[in-house]
Length: 112
Image (cartoon, rainbow, N blue to C red; front, top):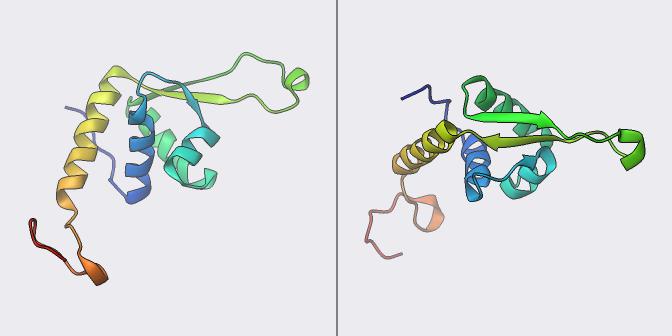
C-alpha cells in the first residue's frame, strides 16, 4: 500500500493540482498557481512526496544564462504515486464533514 503523508489542506491542494493531469511534468510555480499556495508552502510537501516515491523530479536541461532565469525543477507523479494520491485524497475527503451556512456541520441531503 505505501506510506500516506499527513493530509493537511495544503497537502491535499498540491495532490489535486498534480492529479489534474497526472502524466504532465509541472514546475514549482505552476504547482503553486494550480494549488493556490505560496512556494514556501509547496516545496516541503513536494520533498515529502518525493521521499515516499510518489513523485519524481528533474531539472530542465537549459543554460540559465541563455534563458535569463534559473533552471526549473519539474515534478511528475509516479504511477504508484497517482494511485496512492487518489486514495489519499479520497480518504481525506471522506473525513471532512460538509458544512452548511455559518460553518455549521450539515447532514448530507439537508438543505441550507
